[in-house]
Length: 266
Image (tube, rainbow, N blue to C red; front, top):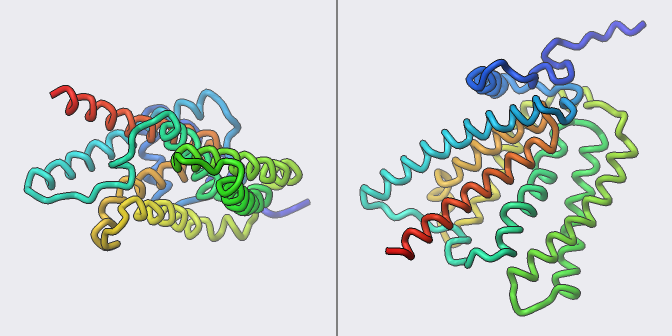
């Protein structure tokens, strides 16, 4: 009989079980930040997971509200903040699909699908990235080559991503019975914070032409979001962080559309 014992915090879903209140869920999240622990497996999709998503979206909204208030105060003091790469783009159906559907799925697969530490997920994430990059590049230069770069890019990315997901799904299915690797669990705090930093860091490129040190404070929202998404991923499953990411992006885009409508109506 094996003498290997797993601590309560490392039990499947122990750190991610639904708290009795929204504040309690937030407290569990902050405890997780102080000591990130990877359970053997995330909880399966359930109503509890959906409730956790709604609660963490509330924390995300609170954090974004505070950061937007700070940004507003900075602008009121006369400072100009750099515009993002999306500032001059028309919000078309193609752009909506990219921001609300393709980006959350693709980014979560790249930055957080492997955080489970399970062999199938780690290898699947690698294959997804490789297949998606290659397929998107080839399709963009051939099949979807057109005059509208946004439409062409979105079509190539979505199709390339679908090809990548098929490759990843095959590996995940083949290794579906394998739990989190022990060495990965030991190093999980490092992997977790690296994923948060990488997710925030890649968004620096949204501010083209600006000094990196100047735009670092502007990706604090992505840093906060990345921390929330990583917590949801390892405790409640990949669907939870993808859904949260999509709602977050959709909400931000909704505010942009509302602001544009209000300015246009003046």
